[in-house]
Length: 451
Ligand SMILES: [Zn+2]
Ligand SMILES: [Zn+2]
Image (cartoon, rainbow, N blue to C red; front, side, top):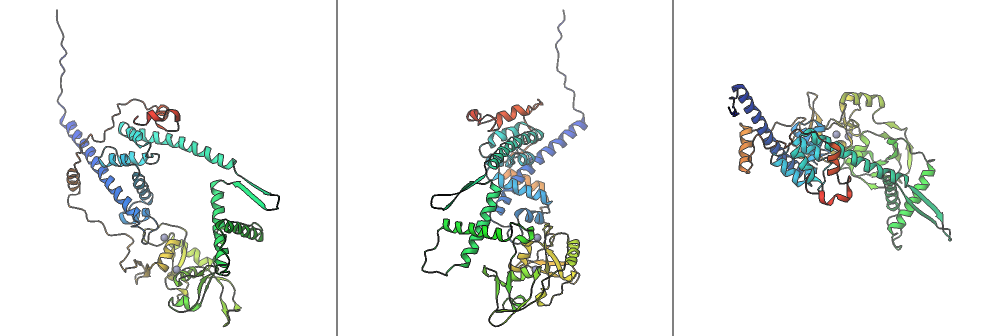
């Protein structure tokens, strides 16, 4: 009789395989360090964003970020979005800071996670691969979207306006509007109220000021009147909000000069504002006599003729302010026409609305250097280059990253971010039933902790 004992044999790892394993571990370990560093980066971006650090010439934190660190605009927006989201998702933020979940997973999860669901979703991120996380998030959003669509349909079908006369003949209104129409109505009421009460402010000092409700009623009257007056024509988008500026020629030439610079019905505006509005506008020159009566009215002309504007848009493509990619813009005279600047292509640049304001009203300067290049400067005179200078990087960036993480008590290794998944098939329907709060509303309570 013979007994076979299976003795486990250990074949020595081939040196090449061992070397590749070490290389793989190094990749995994450094990735964990980078994810931990990304968490710190996002925290810095969040603070910079919240404190408005970008709000000096830039339209948004993402735009500043794209300019300052050379990110593609979409990636910059995504960073800012994730940074903001992590402000309310401490568990996800901490897992990223510990290198336990990758930035990819966190980025996906922040699209759906809320403070109530982040613990469950974090468990998914720790257990599954990035592909699992992506699929769960997609399914999750579908559930969210369906709920949203149901709400929108309810709001739309529930719309209605009841108008009737009571016994005394007073007209009574009661209604429900979907959010979009409601927003439109609120804006129109605001504008109408502003117009009415700017116009009549201070005329009857003895009279008690009208209540908010009375103002709203008057504003609705004005809306009805002006809608009928314009035969219910909403107009082309560009014409809807036309502003009329009354400005003395002297004010356009020299902002310090005495003279009027007024927005029709809104009163005095800074000379910089009227210079901005005049930069690219329809212009009607009127001469007034000493009593303010118009004695001569010229033909309406465009400050920048359409053909020149097309050439300008073709040459500049987007706003020329550093870091700005906005395509719709206004023509800016580098040397203002009111001061004798010619309306020719070399004296014009395209600026978006935001940056046109920055140049005329916030002290930013733009000039064309002798070599034809544009030079932007901040209000304090410091140059604002198209491409900012590169950041100082330590001689050994990875070593300093690792030392910093060690000093923070982080022990990162090749398996820090390894999912616990063992290769089973992902049952998406089951996973969502278990995870999504809307899937099993009645059983939500006992499923809160983990998945
Ligand atoms: Zn301008
Ligand atoms: Zn711009």
